[in-house]
Image (cartoon, rainbow, N blue to C red; front, side, top):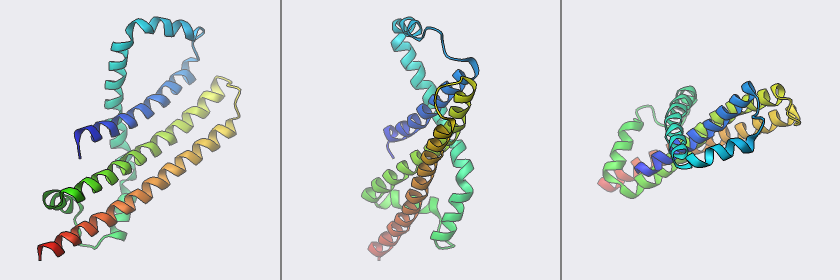
Length: 186
């Protein structure tokens, strides 16, 4: 997987987390009285603020990626046990495919990247839904709490479903790649 793809994955997760962190801040502290004044102050520091936000988002992305991986690993392991032969080693197969199948590696890395983004998005949407409901309730935002909760639950479920489907596809394709490598080496 290219470094650019990994950085992009982590930035996506980090920027998503930054959104719910900002919403949490406003839920706790309220909205600024003069938001335009805040923007005017920030305009002189656009470059350093952008750099700081991107750097912070990357670090945050690393954290939420690891947390989402840890939380969903029992489901991932169950899926591996169901889809793959008992003696199948995912790490060993990945190394073998990387060593012998450059084009297969590119495709599998693409699928794996989508899998990781869907996984971290599901976690961020779940947390973001709770934070959005908290924001609406605490700050008396003129929006239906039920609509916010329902939208969040649907979006979280859709992301989780996407993660499950993409993960299943990844393991099936990884097993197929190993079979192809075995056939071509004989």
